[in-house]
Every structure is written in C-alpha cells, then in structure tokens.
Image 1 (tube, rainbow, N blue to C red):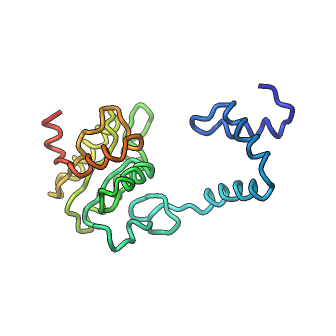
Image 2: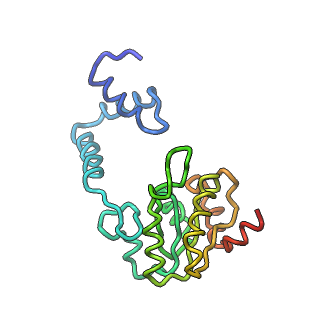
Length: 206
C-alpha cells in the first residue's frame, strides 16, 4: 500500500497491529479520525493514554479495575463464598451479561498451554489457592473455555483444590468443545452457569 504521507503510514501501521484489523481497515479508521475535529481526536488519544497509564488489577480477583479492589469484590450484594474462575476479563463481562451469577470471580490471566510456553506459574493460580485456604468458600465454579487448554487448566486446578473439601463445579457443556466463553450467546452461557455440575461428574460423563 502506497502512502502520500509518512505520518499517515505510521498511523495505519499502528492500527494494523490491533487484532483483527488489516491494513485496509486500519486506513479507514485513520481517515475517519482525520475527518474529526481536533478536540475529538485529542479526547480519543488521551483516553487511551489514561487507560494504559492508570488501569489497575483488583488485588483480590485480578480483574481489570479503576480501584485497588474492583466493584464486584467490594459489592455487599455479591456472594463472596462462591468463586467463579475464568480465563480473563472478557469472560467476566460475558458471564455478567447473563445476570445469572451472583458470586465473585477469580481471573487466571490465561490458560495453561505448554505449546505456548504458559505454565501454572505464569497464571494467578497460587492466589486462588490462597483465597480458598484463608477465606470462607462454599463453591468454586470453573468457567473455562471448552478447549484442550481449558480442560488442562481445569484438571490442574481441581488437583490443587481437592484437598480443601470444597465443591468444585464446572459449567454445563452447552458450549461446544473448542468454543470460547466470550463468543457464547448470553442464553446458552447463562444456562450453563445455572446448570453447573460437579467437576468429578463431568469427568465421568466425558
């Protein structure tokens, strides 16, 4: 793609680094911004800068937050004794959109994937075990994607938690194998949360 401006080329190159954005889409986005008033573009840029500079992660669940403790963990209306374990913030948002889960979360920050060089020590697994060991917990819900990495992580976590004598459940497989939570429709995901089953039962059925 030939550019008449180095500034334009550099901007397109940066936008094209975003997932799912090719050069043509990147060019369209950049030209769209060029057609906006200076104040609008300044607000857009400053919002991204502020996001990257000031964003935090909840000290309890590791979800993205504006404060040291996120709004879910600090809410008196949430059931603090039911912890839903998810891969990342996108899964928290997907489950919250179902309005079917009223506990709290624990964000792992990824899934165990030896092929990608991601091991248990790269995830927030130790802090999950610490939460279960030091706070009243009546159930741990594993809401991980139905992929090989998700199942590997789920099995590892079950081994780490089974000695605590706390029910470990998993969402029902209304989500097809290979499916990721963030792409599941709200009705299917909500039903999977509500009809969760003991993890040991899921092993037997599979």
